[in-house]
Amino acid sequence: MKPDEGDEGTGSAGHGAAAAAADRRDGPLIEMEKAQTAEFTRILTAGGSAVTVWADAVGRQPDKPFLLSGAEVHTYRDVDNMANRTANFFHRRGFRKGDTVALLIYNEPTFVWTFLGLAKVGVKMALLNTNLRGQAMMHCFRIAGATSLVVGQGQPLLDATLELLPELQAEGATIWLQGSAPPPAGVSALDGLVQQESDQPLPSPVSITPADTLCYIYTSGTTGLPKAAIILHGKFLAISYTLVHYAGVQSDDIFYITLPMYHTSGLALGLGTAITKGATVAFRSKFSVRHFWDDCRRYNATVIIYIGELLRYLCTAPERPDDKDHKVRLAFGNGLRPDIWEQFQDRFGIPRIGEFYGMTEGPMGLINVHNKVGAVGVASPAYRTHKPFTLIGCDIDTGEPIRRKDGKCTEVKIGAPGLLVTPVPPDAPYTGYLGKPELTEKKILRNVFQDGDAFFNTGDLMMIDRDYFIYFVDRVGDTFRWKGENVATTEVAQVLSKMAGVQEVNVYGVKVPGQDGRAGMASIIPQPGQKPDFRRWYRYITTKLPTYARPLFLRLTQQIQVTGTFKHQKAALVKEGFDPRRVKDPLFVIDNAKKSYVSLGETAYRKIAGGQARL
Image (cartoon, rainbow, N blue to C red; front, side, top):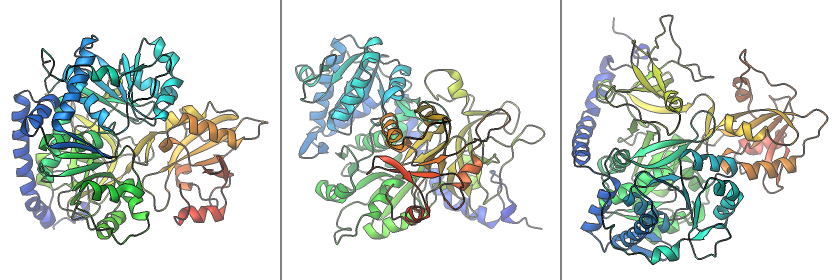
């Protein structure tokens, strides 16, 4: 008797007509990826790096516009000259290959030539999240081993730096400020000194290989403070070549990038792909709903890079007669909900959406090349033989794999959510994070199917449907995703626990109807005998945490449930959410207009659930 497809495992064996059809469907994709791998191997064998690919692009078309920002137009030659000046500046001051410089810069041309200039010297760059403040920012600077900090234009960046100035000086750090504003004491002006340098290449070019570190990109990980994911030159190129093969990006494309350069999508998929093909990049320092399509028209953009939240914001804006008056042919990114996908594509007339799945620190990626709404890629038996990955059973509340009596894991059935894991080949060890080896080791599962094997744990729940498309379901464990950022609950809890009037706190993410990801919520036991000062709490939270990590909802309680090992239990809290009909404890919601947290009753809840309140 033929087995029902719903009873199949997700392994590479597969059964039935659906599996055979999916194998045929994915055949061309497999062949394309094999050709891509062969081409990329040739590039790496020849010693390819971000520096060599950039040099090739400049050599092919030096006078072509490369960067567009406001009224500014910078050609490939212009940017290379500024990169050379930057390289000569740092090299003459003793910076050498293997040193580390931290960058705290918004999306602007100065980021690009600073990045390229330091890369030419072989200096590693710690790309600091411009939303970070206080000890989280200091932690990122310190773990990278940085000796200098380059601060871009913008008073918020300077304020964040000055807050940490004594600690940075204690570390012996040199701080450089870009822009025309006079630097305060303890900070040195950079632009004038760079302009005085030669615009010619370094007298002795630095030898850089694909295995050398280009930069560190920070991720919240699953617990604790941000971790520094190691981005090798080879990995940067691998990501940068993605759109070339999957989406047919050409040199006449114009990228419009509003995602920050300190993230992989903006840096590698956006800037890196444009360099690879000799295309043009248009910048805006921060995403703006009001200016987005006007910018696309102004720059004649043909490709946009997104996260799901970005497209949702665009769809919530009032409709305009010129919504389809643009030249964008491709939107490429991740985290797009199916309902927003169709709404966005229909309203703005985007011919193609390229949804992908990947992690900055992860060794694998998936791409939806079929424009299948909601899917992040394909998972036919043939494809998973070509690119191995598996979905295994896990405890939804803890994220831990479920192991049988023999200690091994089990693949989930078609249609069931499972933890996405991918094998780590013995000859290609996982690079992972900078710092303590245990940070990297935590991402590896061992003895999954047989003794001695090793799998990378993505920490994500995925699902494969009967047509063998694969879908992202949710994050697991102590991390949730909000506003396109991963938020570690332990990090937020550490900050809130130091707030005046707080005895104990448990942080988790809750679903908000109509919103992507999960919003932050904190269950707080107030200090006995102290009345919560919500205005003071608001000031503390908005000062200490970036926007995406701030809890939107507070729940005042008298007891926090813990496990036998004294770990906070979150499952029941997550399930109850912020619905006052289900929660007996007093609930409060952030009110940025009043600069406080205000009582959350049923009327306010209905407005939030109905999308009538802005979060």
